[in-house]
Amino acid sequence: MSSDNTRKDTRILRADAAAIAEAASVLRAGGLAAFPTETVYGLGARADDPRAVASLYAAKGRPSFNPLIAHVRGLDAAKRLGNFSEAALTLAEKFWPGPLTLVVKASGNEGACELARAGLDTIAIRVPSHEIAQALLASVDFPVVAPSANRSGHVSPTAAQHVAEDLSGKIDLILDGGPSKGGIESTIVDFSSGAPRLLRSGGIARGEIEKITGPLLHAAKSEISAPGMMASHYAPHAKLRLDAKEVRENEALLAFGTSPPEGSHRARKILNLSMRGDLAEAASNLYAYLRELDASGAEAIAAAPIPGEGLGEAIRDRLSRAAAPK
Ligand code: TXA
Ligand code: MG
Image (tube, rainbow, N blue to C red):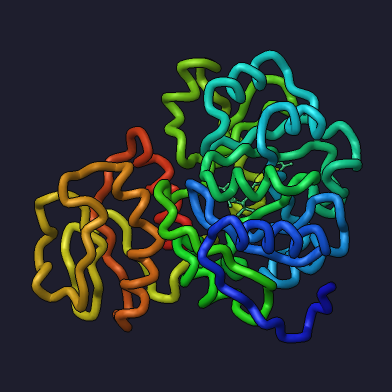
């Protein structure tokens, strides 16, 4: 269906039943359809079709050694893709559907082709809770790989318009389901080699998971087992300055809470992630605000300090990646 260099006529459809059916048939035919999830918008392709997956990598401009998450509608479908340990099952039962991705040993190449897994013998699986994502997954009889629907290395999209800005002309369809509520990607826990490891902090706070698993190990720094964790991921064009106590010339301010950093009057533009210091609200605003401050033309973005507990861990992780040299 897709040749990589031809420009596509990307349709943006309000996500009613007819549009969801249309997205399902795009996927069935090996095309690319973006859809909302409770975390960020995903760019979907059928996981069992190497040609569809290859065109997805091309549209994103993503290095093809970076494995994708297979999205399915529930635990039964998930069990067909991978082997769940007792501990992995317990987490799945507690948090699915929702912003948790589990990495387990893959059961074969049937459901998700090797290219989707970047040749690994493990597979990342997620059951999203967003009702449009659920409806789409219920309309197809294959798993759907869905990375965040942005050009590789850009800020993740939390609205259909963000997807269009990055991928218009490269994909077939965008289902518009309004803004994503969670705003930050799923938490990834790896069960594929014994004791569970946290590969990516995300929409479910580590503490919530550790209540069930006990302390999670950390992925070794040298490992590329979650290569989406490459430092410069999620980056805006402007430089980002973390834990800023003051605002300097030509900076925009990403604020948090009620006490403004010194020199705030100098800011080219100010957006407050959460006036009342609520971390869930801050997560849901993070990517949209980074885009907006970036568009203000400021040379740099000063990010006010954000506490590291709960969802703050994932927010700080994304900010420090966005601040890394490109
Ligand atoms: O919230 C989310 O998870 C979103 C929405 C769209 O569902 N998706 C998302 O996908 O963030 P993506 O492709 O942007 O990030 C997937 C991450 C990458 O860091 C990738 O390296 C890691 O998952 N990953 C995928 N398969 C893996 C595997 N078998 N082992 C370890 N890490 C894996
Ligand atoms: Mg991504």
